[in-house]
Amino acid sequence: MLKKLLCLFILFTISLSYTSVSASDSLYVWSSGVETSAVPTSSVINAQNDNSLNLTCGSAVLIEQNTGTVLYDHNMHEQLRPASVTKVMTILLIMEAIDNGTISLQDNVPCSENASSMGGSQIWLDPTETLTVDEMLKAICVVSANDCCVAMAEYIAGSQELFVERMNTRAKELGMNDTTFKNCHGLDEDGHVTSSYDIALMSRELMTKHPSITNYTTIWMDTLRDGKSQLVNTNKLLRNYQGCTGLKTGSTSTALFNLSATATRDNLSLIAVVMRGETGAIRFAEAQKLLDYGFSNFEYYSCANTGDILKDILVEKGTVKNVTVGFKYETGVLIPKGQRENITTTIVLPDSVPAPVNKGDKLGEVIFKLGEETLSTIDLISTGTVKKISFPNMLTHVFSKWFNLLR
Image (cartoon, rainbow, N blue to C red; front, side):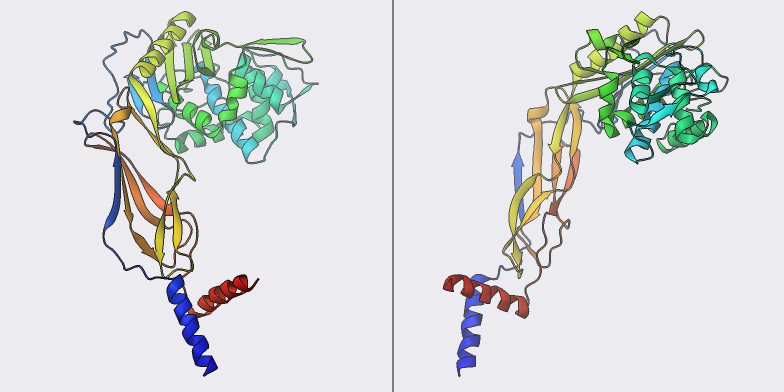
């Protein structure tokens, strides 16, 4: 008799603790914003390609850094000599080697006779000296040191030739179909070509995956060798363009004047590439035209951040009543300037989900629209795990409650 009463009490307690929620096909829908007529969005933004900015350079492109959207195209796939803008790829491979632990910023890098013999921009490395990776990066980013590029290529890959093979492999991985690298520094060499679009691709990879590179690319003046070597940045936009973050200049008598310019204002990051400018001044002026065009006409709208919490929803027959729902990943979209208030947000989510629920399970989605155009659809996921209730864990839960009450 005592056992029967105990079982009935347990079942009664369980029924109070876990009121079953019937399955529902209805969806929880929440919207914000004002519906408007269709307007151009990030998915349908067409790059200007009529040279409305009256550029005189041989090739140019403007892209938004986060999404990669092309905003302005002037012969962007024409194959041209990049000069020292080549070093964007060299810097990218150096940063990747640091990230994967192959090298560190504190490593001492020797200088070979081959590296010290490089012409063009250099810091006159001596074969008897060593510099740290940190110092080499500074020299490459600030004064475009060819000798430091070769020294780093030899340190990472064993030879410049093997390093250049890695450069070309990485270029293919990034979709740089207009590019063939012949060296790591950019001095003129037959067949060493790329395009403004490809430069934008590798610049974007560097800036988005290795933002710490701006610790070097934003240096205006500095020194090496205990103050004996003066460094002044070749990128004049750093001093006269608001929000400039880099990135790399390049010029030779054959390539003329090239530039990959990056800048950020109000959470909008742009990359402007100019190739074959007639003079250094024209190169900077036309990059500024591109950046001005981007900042005047577009803005970046952040849709969600990884780990942001949306709400709790009920879990049917779970060991706990609710599970927290969050966004799967961080994302944002490029929109025409002034359209932020017209973005609508629709959340599609069930009233409840059945147990078990695992962390990371997709439970719904959120849709961002501007007019009739869908800007982004983001998965909503469970941020925790909820096991399905069973007789053993029901007993565990009930007895734990009893013990808590008796304390």
